[in-house]
Image (cartoon, rainbow, N blue to C red; front, side, top):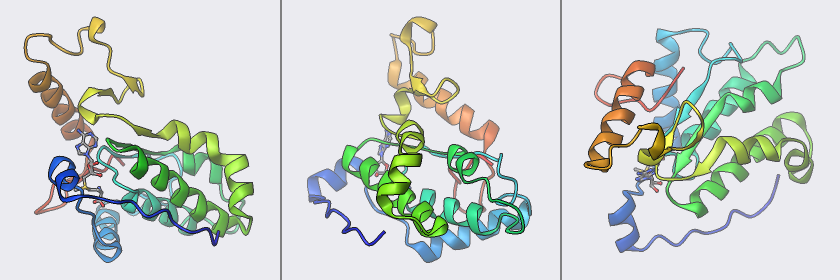
Length: 187
Ligand SMILES: C[S@@+](CC[C@H](N)C(=O)[O-])C[C@H]1O[C@@H](n2cnc3c(N)ncnc32)[C@H](O)[C@@H]1O
């Protein structure tokens, strides 16, 4: 808590390559609330999992975490560990990933009224495991590991195409779609 956010320098060239245009918090919240209308238990059921396959610096991840913590039954101990373990993200750029992990730990620290260092000590391993720096098209979401070509997940003839197809199929099977925008959410 109270730590300075590192400033990430995003050159025009980099933005062109990575499409790093981030969703403002008001819009993130609006999208998440529209998902909750479709499923009122979305944030109260700690076991429901979420995936952001192009997570950026964590705009969706931190708000999902915030809502899962705040909307959980506060009359019982909130299962912070389980909640944190239910949120996954992938991004191509390491500085984004580091910032996303940091922001998630800041949310936890604030919720538990502990320091950022304490949150990192207790929960750091979870965000390091769940928020990874990788090309999502070469990531095996089921195994949560780099895709293994020898398992036939990738065809050597047309690797990019087949990986894209696989990711799209996976996302279609598991996501709720927000009208007008494909939602990267996996409740
Ligand atoms: C348009 S931004 C969106 C970030 C975030 N979802 C948001 O809405 O604020 C796209 C993000 O996708 C990442 N990205 C682009 N191609 C990717 C890929 N193949 N695998 C993983 N991440 C990728 C970029 O680094 C960038 O942070």
